[in-house]
Amino acid sequence: MFNRAVWRDAATVHNIRDIMGKSKKRTPAGTCLGRSQKRGKQKSHGRFRRREHMLILSGRFDRLPYRQYEITSQWDLGGDGKCFWGFAPEKEWFIRAMRK
Image 1 (cartoon, rainbow, N blue to C red):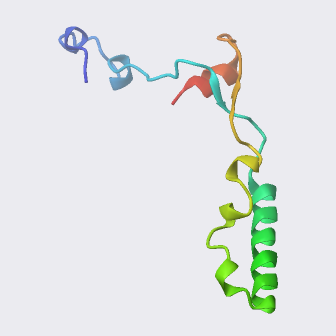
Image 2 (cartoon, rainbow, N blue to C red):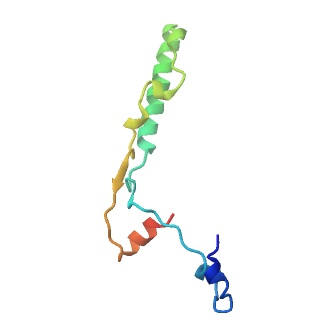
Image 3 (cartoon, rainbow, N blue to C red):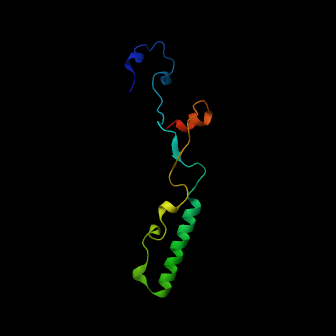
């Protein structure tokens, strides 16, 4: 956990952060910023409830869906996949994004 060579010189260390390294991401990529799944989930729940309601009214209980993903694929919701942010090591947003 600690670098033993640096830890031996404990008299010169003023803060524990001087000893321990900071973990960082290797690749500047992540979920697409600003994209939420909220609208997609609302539509999916609405479709599920509507399908369930119509099948109950028609008496087809054997065809009732068990999960919402039987009607709408979870990959069709917003915010799926990853985006490459690009390299900008001097920018503040890049430093914050690369921290784990």
